[in-house]
Length: 267
Image 1: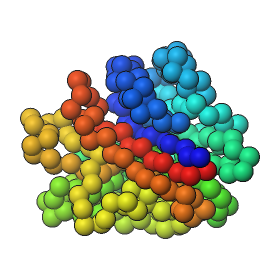
Image 2: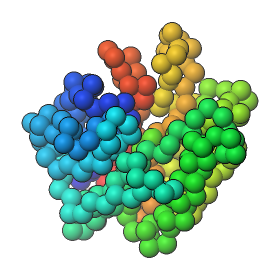
Image 3: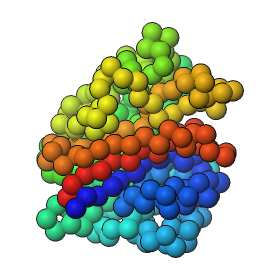
């Protein structure tokens, strides 16, 4: 028996609900984690998900900005939200999937982008991003990560050389600066997390989940970054069965600049 979990920064769930429902109908993941839903809970299009069997829903919304949501065909028994760096800006939600033999905690994250200037002394957005990561590092360790857990979402950092189209040219660009990539690795190491995507894609191969809207022809230029991630704790390492990056979704009509990532695990 397997479970499939998808993660997707949808960049407005109401604007792109037709794309989301088409994706769910075609790929039928058991759980879908969305980021940047850009709506409050009351405005979340719950009915569209209910019709497709995703009746279990956990939403942490915010008017016009940010927001995360987890919808599932499988029940969950507990939902938690957490604020980071002194802000309540709807960037995290976790659920406990109810499997008697293998209960799994599923974290859905949307880490701040960090603005344009990679200097926390002059850029509050970048300072927020670094502070957010520091709190993740101190929290997601020990008892929080000793059991079966999965962390997915738009982490807004492409940590490795081949997670970006040009390592050299992007070293001073927010999302790939050394201070960010080092800190994200510290978060991962602190909890013993395993990078599930790189488990299946060798480190010397390019791997992207995001392409800028600024590119006239995103596919030809292929100047991507891997900003979306799937991590698992050691108890789930041997259960990983595969990862799929739905690159073609970037070419859909009025797409998000991110594409879905689907992970499969044995349970």
